[in-house]
Length: 375
Image 1 (cartoon, one colour):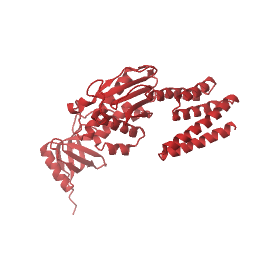
Image 2 (cartoon, rainbow, N blue to C red):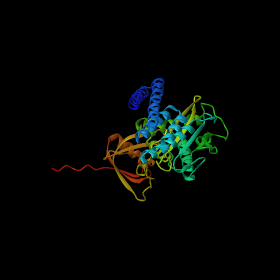
Image 3 (spheres, rainbow, N blue to C red):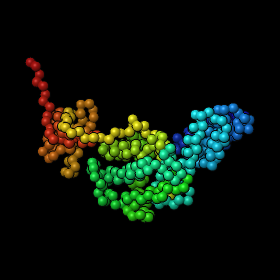
Image 4 (tube, helix red, strand yellow):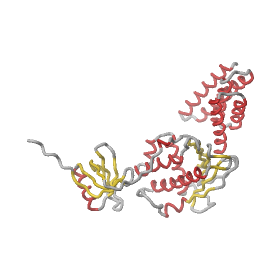
């Protein structure tokens, strides 16, 4: 067996593994992946033994290390990366190998390794330039813990169908069961446990509110990370909650430099569930904080949806002429006008203030006058 044929066999098996995974055939995926790893390790070992020139040597070792990570064999991956770096790889590949070495440590610490989690616990791991063993830049860590707690509250409020809270703290019935407690960082990484409970050190039953909210939040973060916004919107149909989730998820996600990876481990039905956020959020893609305007503005369009069952928080939606949808807020007098305009599909001018990206506080409605036809 030569280097070329061993590598070719490994890539064929790796492709079969990906096809099996796409079909949901986990056992076949693992079987093909194990065989692909064995073939690629054989090719890499031959490259080392035969003193193959760079970059062939380091590329094969890097490829084998990636397959080892995918297989969960982190010790083998560490050895392969170390051998590759002990040679003279091109700087670009050397940098990739160093990043892969960080990812190996990240993957290792996503596994609990003797740490006992309850169903209402989340292990969070950070990797990047702002992170050292057992330490992390305070702004990167504290901001992500704060963002995670906000997302817990918002997930609970959204799932309960509560009106969107523009500002202020959540109601006690939401906040009380979702208190967040943080463990000390664990050695050799920046990994901490986040306990979500009504009291510190409390283990919760699988049907508890904290467990349900954690499961929903992690599922939705995975949708965000793979950019499956259609599924995410189905899970969070209310536009205010959806936009808020996307904005907070962007704050939680890696920035690609100071923090390159953010990972979570949870316990679901007694089984570890691991999730890695690898999507780097570029500065230009981060949602800018909305600043309400001081003056009055106008929207022109048609009221196309009304729901006034909840008298305190009626839902009024208007579609403007450019196709954008707005949620309108209004007092009882303006609300009655909106009802009439919706029934007759009348074009209206809404005068008021924009209070969020998609919400408009109406002070006055009026119908758009039709131009009289020339005789």
